[in-house]
Length: 268
Image 1 (cartoon, rainbow, N blue to C red):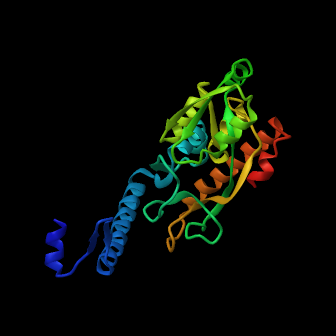
Image 2: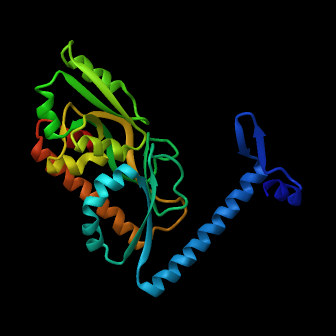
Image 3: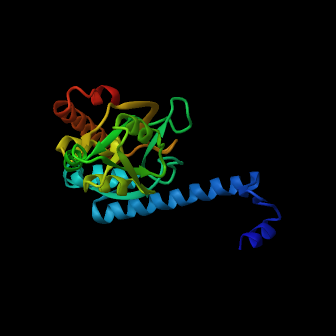
């Protein structure tokens, strides 16, 4: 079908090589035009739905980990705070990256000055090992450590924890490509996982997870980005401000529970 389209237009839309396929200049022009058209159609459909139901659709691009472990425990509170919002989700199981043109808000990590650095500040990227209280109690009695590794992250933290343990201790590692599963295993007492503050804050404030080391702050910031050139609707702004407010509330409660860790200071 793509080859037929190229013949019809009498131009090459794709550059094919041993490394894969990329858009040519003409292909990129067509892609941008089609994307704008689909966005316009989606906007019209949303407006029709809003007129019929009284609800406004707001689509979030977030990680499956954030959706499962941060948002779902309080989804009722969000619906109560924004009763006229119909939430939709674009879930990402790996690293939070990529454009946000097709959604209303996208959670993204970026260094200052990067292409994805625009948007409302949510929290700094802060990580530290976490585990359940049950695992923490078992850890003190056993000579074996189990690390739960996220395939999209660094393993340096595991090496540091191994150094801090007794030389005779033995360790095993579980590997998962979805961070939501990584944290679920930690909550079930299966081992120690690396916790990103933007995902684990709910479980830290409830005590379901406990920090096992000092917070490590990177150079990246987590932001809630909106498509460039697209006016932000009141419903989208309300959802964004609610998310930020809830994160600040989490950090206050974590500070009260773990005052010596400095997690809030590192996160903001």
